[in-house]
Amino acid sequence: MKRTKRRYIAVQLDCDGVPTERDLLDAVWASLTKLYGEVGASLAGLVLISFDVERKMAVFRVALVCLPQVRASLAVVTSVADVEVSLHVLSVSGTLKALFSNL
Amino acid sequence: MKRVFADLHLRVNPKDQQTAQRIIERAAKFGYKSISIPFNTQLEIAEVAALKTASAKVGLDFVLRADFKPRNQEDLMHFLRKFRRKVEVLCIVCDDKEIARQAAKDRRVDLLNFPSLDYRKRFFDRAEAELASCGLAALEVDAKSLLVLGGPPRVRLLASLRREVSIAREFHVPIVFSSGVSDPQLMRMPRDLVSLSFLVGLGESEALDAVSINPQTIVGRNRVKLDSKFVAPGITVVREAKN
Image 1 (cartoon, helix red, strand yellow):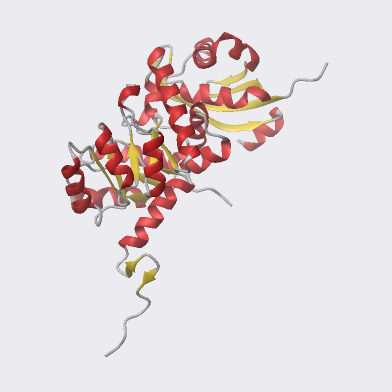
Image 2 (cartoon, chains in turn purple, brown):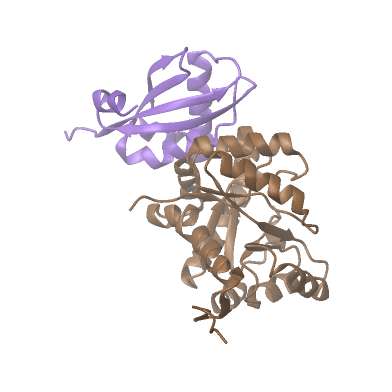
């Protein structure tokens, strides 16, 4: 079976306060599902790799084929758990090592 | 070549200096090089100067833009005569078919904006695109509605925008993708705006052009025309003869 190509996305949260990891992931999933439906969201292979509360920075892993869809879904997020949030993509990379070196 | 990004539609009240300042600082932080806060029917020199100074402080180029929603064709002509020589970007907000047609064929209009969410009040059809392609007008798409709407209204808006973008592409009408936000929290980085434009059917290079080359081309073209050395298209004063 062919290996699935993946990309890592570093996202900066712009908000007052810090949402929980669960709330953030739920918000991104909700946005992805709203835009592309359950089938589309299932293809994205979205996983939250890490969430740095101090720097308000999260790292997601997605399938390469769904990268534009996930980026659009991240841009559409306006609130997480009723708190106004905007998510800004800082960097996209094929490996975590390269991602963190780009930041 | 490094792209220079522009957001020509930050809808802040120019009188509200505090919010304008916040928006300008955020735009600089996000990596924009040019921004514009539209004026409506009155250009206050003091406000323009304050915005230009605030933008220059953070390394931004402030583009002077006027938006107008004419009631009828005479109103449109009056506005164009009054403002064309004063502003760098001129946008007509089209709420009426006759005005949309007139604005599309007038070469003084830079941007056509269709704010209505009702698809029956969005007049960017093939006839409109044909007129716009003969003139110089570009289609402006605001990201704000995509951010604030949800559910069926957003679905309908996306369908309308996809249709309009496809028509614009067919008739080679440039597309300018702007944020159109008044709340600093809704501002997005240029690359995130590009991601949002993916939703309306723009390809990657087209989307990048819509937030960089297309707005910059409009601004550059008009700055040349507003220059004191400009005489007519292709003719500029190189130097004045000594008597």
